[in-house]
Length: 92
Image (cartoon, rainbow, N blue to C red):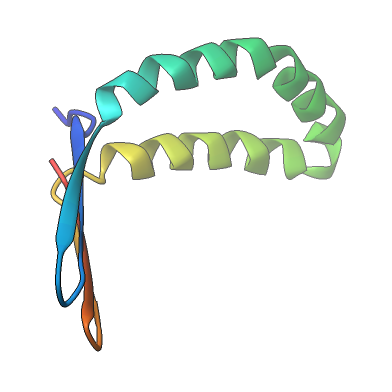
């Protein structure tokens, strides 16, 4: 069973100093659900209008793909180095 990511740690380092920021992603999930509930009538109307041209099915599959990508972010590490700066993002 896959679980959604809980935290994101962003570190930005310069030659002289740096700082880190912890972002709680578990607080984003309820907010995203509220937005989805509010926009669901518009999504259903758009899907019904676009269904005969097969774009409706693609729109529904893209919503599913977005959820799958969010759930698969757990364990993601991104490090970018540029001259004197370093940016590191890790998802826990």
